[in-house]
Amino acid sequence: MMKKSAQPSERIVAIVGRPNVGKSALFNRLVRRRLAIVHSEEGVTRDRLMASAEWLGQRFEVVDTGGLALMDRAQSSDEIVRATTEQVHAAIADAAVVIQVVDITVGCQPMDVEVARLLRKSGRPVVVAANKADTPDWDDKTGDFARLGYPVRPIAAIHNRGIEGLLEAVLPHLPPPADDTDLPRLKVAVVGRPNVGKSSYINRLTGSDRVIVTDVPGTTRDRISVPFSLKAADGAVRHYTLVDTAGMRKQFRVRDSVEKFSFFRAEQTIAEADIVVVLMDAAAGPGKQEKKILALARERQKACVLLINKWDLARGTGVKEADYEASLRKELFFLSDIPVVFVSALSGHHIRRSFEIIDAVAARLMTVIPTGVLNRVLHDAFQKTQPPFSGRRQLKFYYATQTGQNPPRITLFVNEPRLNNPTYQAYLTTRLRDAFDLAGVPLILRYRSSHGQRRPDGP
Image 1 (cartoon, rainbow, N blue to C red):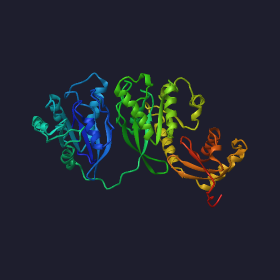
Image 2: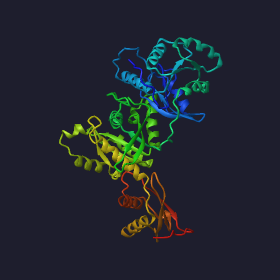
Image 3: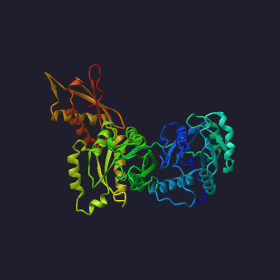
Image 4: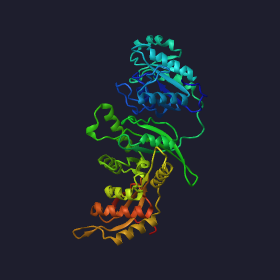
């Protein structure tokens, strides 16, 4: 039973309702991005999804929730249904105002009444969004929802109809905006095969049941974003957004359209992330899927950390971390620079340490290399290993400068850029990683002809 709780100070709008009334469509409309999966299948949304929105200069957070399908005090034998319901209750407790979405085309249903009764117990202000009112002809049907006891606004989320009127009714219930400006947050994508413990890891790290965890593979379908802050050893507080993703199965195992879209979202999350954290089951070891995910992260030039989860189970077998890591690096030889951490989301083993490693990688993304030191390291590298030839021509290095961050980008001025080859590129990258402690961070080297360029002052 939901208890009435104190009014929160956060500017959060929660979207709730029974299944398949258009909650995710409204969520996408308010945040102006297609973040939530919209599908006719019931129960597609399970976790809470949160994203920022803005209307007429007012900023606020919007939370999408799974459909409420249980009558009050009813119990379900379905673990996911129970967990989804708990997530809805948590979203309501966090919200300053709630939008209850109903389907105007079918009228007021018993479950709509039940949802309204639940909301009344919470004490939160509520506005009813009568969705699927695609034309003005439907507006007169809003009277059917008067029994819910809340103001009703006809809308069509898909067609952007009635959204302004809805927000005019919702936003006055929000607390005043905070004085502080938005904090910059690096995106950390947590990826891996289904059921390796991604959601458990995020919940353990944040100290909350923010993401649904079950033994059912594929429980997470949408991308779940969780704000997280870490106070580092130097006293600085750094801010992140942790993104839980759907498990990335092999393509031939991806059967239904929702799962295919979830897989696409996971790939998209990697592309948008600053850091990719790959979770692997210690007992299963690295398979083709882990190699594919790591290769995708490297191809997208993303910083990366590999976490070996469920290490509490492996520790009892006598396997040592050093031996396991040596074997792992031998198999994943193309990713020798990526930090590896052994963790247990269940017991909490090395959870804090894992994020300290992630934080260190984040700091390396913003590395600034002094020009003089950079050039000395590269000159030394060219002297120790002969540059490539092509015919009678040999690659000659003149000077270099850093031209970007996140990830670090370095431009080398040479006689003829075409003389460079992948082998020598890898050699130079390794030398620079070792010299400037860039483990886990992609390093982009670009080559330009020195003709017409003036060498900068200093060595």
